[in-house]
Image (cartoon, rainbow, N blue to C red; front, side, top):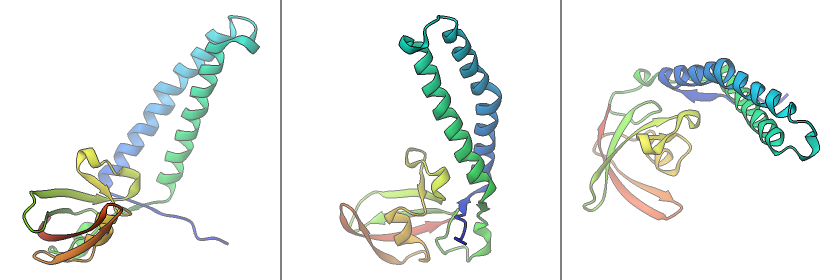
Length: 158
């Protein structure tokens, strides 16, 4: 039998997914059901764009609910305290500077389920995170990205 995929995430990320799931089930699902009910009252469903739109929304909503439930079922909570404090691991904030003289950048390395680059959270599956994981403060690391190779120096891990 195939091994089940796990979804690494922080405790905070798990809470956010649980809150999103609750909102989808308690608030969003009843709204969509009501939209379908109203659209049905318009009569002929074969030419009813409101009905089609509501059914599409329901399909996407139910798909998202299933995805979140699956991720929560197989969630693997990251314990960033189980490694050396100066080592880059999942769950830690890492500051690095692209060499020779770019501005420092800081990201938290999280599981793909909670990645949000605009909020400073990058997936452990991203090229940058893959290149940084396992390295330590003051190390210079070559990272291969789709845009080419870059050399960075890790300046802080917390």
